[in-house]
Amino acid sequence: MGAAVPPELSRLFDAPPGLKRDEVWASFVAANSRLIIRVARSIDPDHDAVMDAYAYVLERLRADDCRRLRDYAPDGRTKFTTWLVVVARRLCLDLLRRRYGRPPPASARGDPAVQRAVRRRLVDLVAGADPDEIAGPDADPTQSLNAADVSRTLTLATSRLHADDRLLLKLRFDDDLSAPEIARLLGLPTPFHVYRRLTFLFGELRGALRERGIHGAEP
Amino acid sequence: MPGEKIAGHLTAMEVAAYVDNGLEAAARARVRSHVAECDECRGEVIAVARLARTGSRYRWKTLVPLAAAAALVLYFAPWRPSDSTAPVLREPGVTTIVAPTPIAPRGAVKALPALTWSSVPLADRYEVTLFDADGSVLWETQTADTTAVVAATVRIVVGVPHYWKVAARTEQGRWVASDLTSFTLSRAPPLR
Image 1: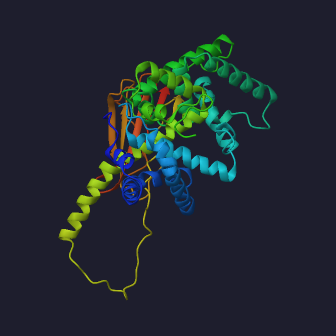
Image 2 (image 1 turned 30 degrees about the vertical axis):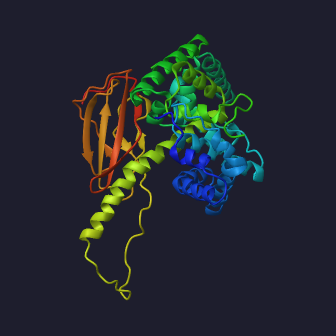
């Protein structure tokens, strides 16, 4: 990972305005189009939306004498392409918000049943509940109260964990990431480290449940 | 505005440097602490990591073999004029390859059932691998079915997590594997 301005950028910044600048810009576009299109497609896969977002990103990157591209500081901590992914993605979201308004927060998006199912998985894993006996809407009120108590206690116990552990649980149960993906994001050597830490955390959370007199977690 | 810190959110440089593993330990811990609380930044880090990874994989693992394959095809494939009058009778193409999904066992189980997973279109072979808590391979087998019974000689330790995964062969030499799935046996298996 070098600390120099990428050649395609330095050529762009050094080019005199006019025909030469247009030529260098065209080569910058040619070199990065695939990346920008991939980013645009990740936001909205519709072909027209991708092309609109692609054009918008290029327009914004070139605006004000490439002001945004000049923000890139090659300090050796990141690759230009990764930084460009972040900026292009933010611009695509910016376009989406201009057109459709700010999307609801992640917690309010998606099928509520699916979201409930994802949250339940942590409760089930920690509290050892039988999935066939999960309280439904017409369940026994006592059963519903117990489930609410487990959920409340678990939320409280989770909030007391170290930020790294809370992040691990969120990546696994809120974002539904795979263990290899979590390992990469957290800098853990293997997916097994993720599983081991999760197993440890389940133990901690089970302990918190036991302190509240909830013993469904006993193996 | 892209690249700038807004209302305490991560800057573009921070997100990119985190994904590229370029931050020092303290800065990395700060980012982790922030994304543990901020859904928006966490979503951004996840999305950028996926896009950056897809890009590098796409460049090296797809383009090079594709270019090599294209060169071989151009070199060896005999040229044949197309017969436009011949009827076209073929199955619809499979455009995406899905990984098999482990179905059971998952989480806490009272007895070890047969390992069961979802089928993958056009898969002719599955390879199942069972690991202990340290990641050592305990047992593996290949089958054409979507279920496999763990050999009786394999020792499953009660109360200790075990992991398994399954890979499907969709065409000659091409495998697609599931994520690792964990299960913990809560009581000793009956003698078999």
